[in-house]
Length: 161
Image (cartoon, rainbow, N blue to C red):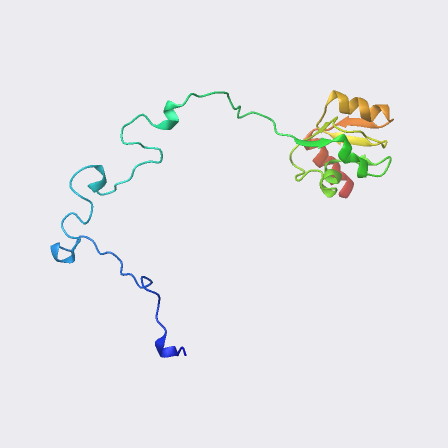
């Protein structure tokens, strides 16, 4: 039977911290486990990530392709078939898109794409529409309104305020 006075920590759980640079009697004296000379024996020894000891680093050896513009506009994508869950003759603004769970954020512009079939007449306010989406919406008698992000925020404040 196990008693409280028999409890012990598992072997290796109480390992002492390695004390360095306290003379040769410690077993870690003189060079303190760093070896002799060289970059790693010096104080402040650090090598930056990706450093390969003077060899041409991998990141510089592999070929580079493409270009990423820092001015690229990001859009949240909504397809036509996702809009079928809305009631007929509804006006969809950025707020409604978020409330329905079609997009996550109100402050990123929305682009409506023409994938799928739309079966209801809707008025949709978004930053961009693909040609096929615009045609499909207007063929059913709906409206497409291009709204800049600042305009949409001002309109919702005016409506709520």
